[in-house]
Length: 84
Image 1: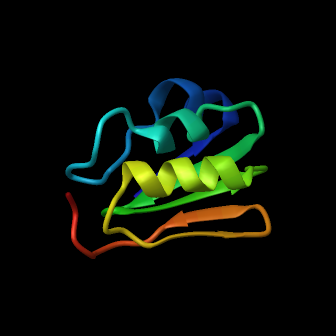
Image 2: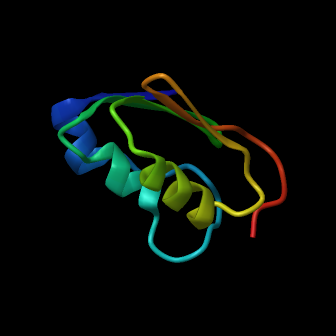
Image 3: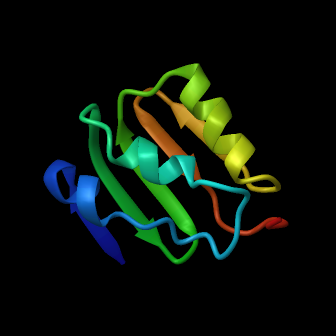
């Protein structure tokens, strides 16, 4: 399990999803100043902070076949599913 706070998230967070389309938007979202923490467990990711609907859409687009949710200030990339 990896856990990063704001300062480390900017430099060290790496998306644990084995493969996905193009640039990892999740890594960009984790590096924003509005992100409080990013935690990865296997291929699941929990990111806490303030996110827009566009960022949610962009994360979903970069991780096709994965279930991505945004509840209040918690964005979750759920494990499993078809990974393209």
